Image (cartoon, rainbow, N blue to C red):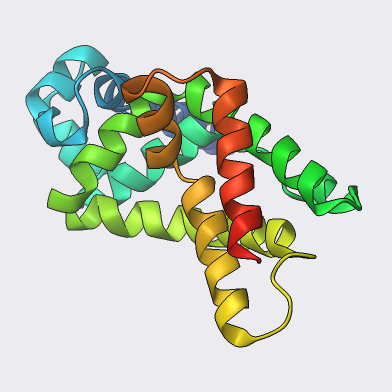
Length: 207
């Protein structure tokens, strides 16, 4: 009897681990299916039925793992960023010249936008109509955008308060996805020209 009990207790942790592994695998499939759909058609046009079909699960399973839209959006955001990380502002701070720093940063940020353009364009388009998505996007961007402004405004945003505010606003505009997409995709400007144009606009805001 003791031996039987021992075998049962040994099997229980294994069964629990197997179940947990299975749940993690299901969750991974759901997130990957959702990320793919967000990149293809955007969050607003992604349906739970299609997520379930691609993930090979039932619709109820999607709701079980992600009862709220915000939970699924957050998981998808983390998954996307893990494979497409935004550039780190810290190395830019080591460049003493504000102009050089600004141009280096813009080149790296624009390369990041180009690499994730489909996803980023859909997110920009759809977040206005999806409050849960908008909250996730804002929470994810806040720290990074703040660091970018802090580093790139250094040496330019000096003096009176109005100038500081103007420079920081110009940096925010110059480093935005909208500015890059408008100038490169809609206006058809070469990317090196876009970097220079935006950099000069920021520098002019400090005058």
